Image 1 (tube, rainbow, N blue to C red):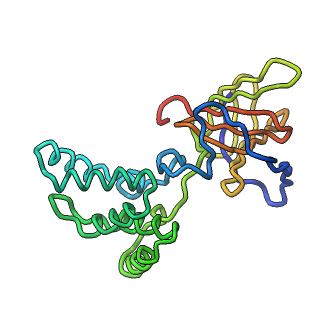
Image 2 (spheres, helix red, strand yellow; image 1 turned 90 degrees about the vertical axis):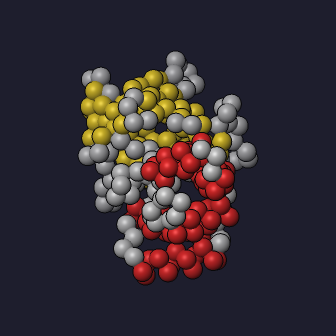
Amino acid sequence: MHVVARNPAPGEAHIPFEPVRGPEKLPHGFIPIDAVKSLPMLGRWTPLPDGMPPWLPFHALVEMARREHAGDEHARAWLETYRHAVQGDVAAQAAMGRKCEAGGAGVAPDIPRAFFWFYRAALSGDADASDNALRLKEEADIPAAAMAEPSLIYPGQWRWWREEPDRPGTRLIVELAADGTFRGAGVNGLWSYDAGRRTVTLAHHETWRVRILACRDSTLYGRDTRGAPCILERTGPGR
């Protein structure tokens, strides 16, 4: 099945979900979305002008890895700070903001990423990081991607499983494209993702609406409007 993405149409009705009552029993290895701190696990990030996600300073990482291999302790400390920042450590994120702003050690200053790291730390309550983010916003042209939230669902190929209480589960391969429509395997329709509600909708001869509850690497777990468990796994190129 080939799927493509759209925004909900004006006035489109939303099917309400029943709230999860009590702790959700998750499949083995899955982490509740609200507990995820790792930036890569939060989904696909809008790239900065260099084509890389805001959390991935590719050229700086290559240079620092080269220097660490040569025994440079400054590079080793830089990489250690980066690893903690990517895993959600607020102090490390603020430190990465300072490192990206200052540059040095063979790495040019990277103001958009400096803003990104200050901004992430500020979202977690770091007041100094908030001041630094506001300062950079006034001093430089910060791309919107540095402030954008990641998307758990995005265009590409996905494998879907849905458990059925009274029959064998449903399995689909879907190709989400960026224009809001889908076709494939004799089915075509529309798809959308509501980031605020973490809800993905596939609309064809029947409508699947799934709230995402947890993740594990490139695999997501959720429940549909009937409470049926669903697994969504990113497959294919660019996963």
